[in-house]
Length: 373
Image (spheres, one colour):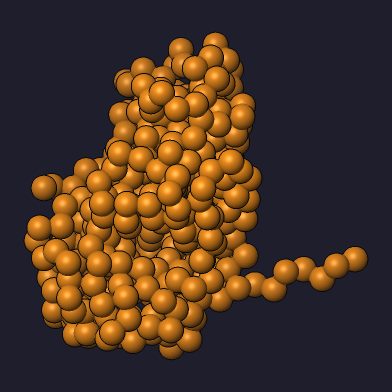
């Protein structure tokens, strides 16, 4: 019997311990779930700024003469045509059209791309890309162990980055960096990728750099953020933030048994491209006729259905909750759930079985929360 894999820790683990963080296992990593209060950390991101350690995410470099056309074949989206330093959300599909992982792809050069995958899918994503690279002049290089990833999210995030000591040689001023675009920079002489991306529904930035510079960058951001309400934020607040923003989480809303159209991600699949891609035939055929689709649910009171709780119409179970919480921003329960398509119309009255207690809920469009521009 082999020994279990040891839990991994972020290059910022000692920093989190010093801040009094509580830790949880996440995809085999010990990551901070909270520092003080989930609600306080959530509110800080909505009103000021929060700083997150996302170093558990996977960074896979894809480069070579065929890199663009290879990614068009390996993924559901059209990646070969994105601009230099543009980011694009895409999907790795199985042959049966299920979602192997959802990723963000950055074009770093004419023939160089960075694929950012979920921590729990690092091995599966890297293996799928490597297998699909056969016949292409391309290299797939999993560099996850060399990267740290720090996110600053919230309305004050740009001001914080602009005042962070040590960030120099920005290729583009931050006020000109639009959503889902990135720019090169340096932090104390170490190459830094600054991307205007995030997973909270707020304005913000994600910063990629070598692990050796992660601790100094975290402290520099903390120092600059002291006058802007910046607080360290853990995975618990990140989850409620992304839920309010209607953003799916792999393992909850997405998995290999779910096709993009069921998850409301049909727009991510480029069926107009000439290139064949893994899963294309299955996606074109579509899911089964009565396959469940993802919806938002809202209810009153304080109790929200959690993942796996049944969704009921009359006496019939017609779906299940995938994520749910009492929304800190909106003040009422919100949930995402897969339900039969006949019950997916906004305004449809349903019931969520919360540990034997029927809780009335209403189908509502996603997202639940949208920031003011």
